[in-house]
Image (cartoon, protein in one colour):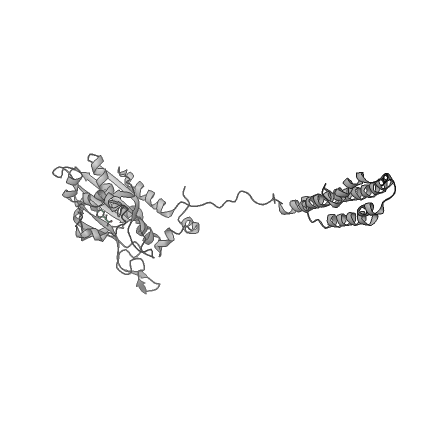
Length: 373
Ligand code: PHE
């Protein structure tokens, strides 16, 4: 039989003895001192001052002790917990201050830096040239026409007298879209805009159409699977090759300067008859093929490679078969058409050696052409 447990029982109190409580406290204080930041300290708080921490558990046990032991242990545990809480609060304050200081350093904004120096971009040289060309013709009373880049095979070829088995179809390496039975291509030239214009308007027609075209060419210094052409089309009564020549001479002078004329070389396009290649008299050597090299010396002109002329594009009198296919009366109307590369025009106008310069997106290249907005 045992009586009420009124005497001091050293066995029961051992876990709450001085040594243990001090050890718990010191361990907590060391962890607090070692916490590197506010987050780490939060964990230390849970581990060393929370309900399930050694000191928290010790505190719970106090209630079960006999009165004298309760008092001693209560004081020891209470003091230890007090010291830990105080250390936590002090460390918290230090770490918060440190974090703030750190933030001030890393998030510094230098308000004296210039804020208004965003480098200005530049409009693309091809866009500028396309607009310049359109303006030249608009000034003569022509209109600007447009067509889709993804085009019906019929408009890109058949309407232009390029039937499915026409040998000239292979002159333009074509991107076909899937499925093939839809007969849709990426337009290989701007000439389908001729057909579209004739089909939707009644003559007189005076249109110019700058735009993108696509061919399965390699991408190198002089070729690109995507490039730009400008198409011109006139349909009216009494139009002759002379009107074509006059328009192209005017176009050449407006782009390359006074006295820069054109010459025609016989050629073949299914949609024009007769057809011609247009050459431009070299605007550097003016047809001589040589340029002054100082004194009495002269060297071959680099712009035309000594030819005196530069190939510019194709042209001709609109084939009556095209007029018929597009619903224009060939007995009443005649017309002319021309087409040339805008990229090529820019290349020799500005001495650009590599076509790819236009497509690589380097703003320093574009800026050299002016930043007209
Ligand atoms: N469409 C022709 C080409 O891309 C150029 C051209 C246009 C020729 C108009 C004659 C008339 O090669």
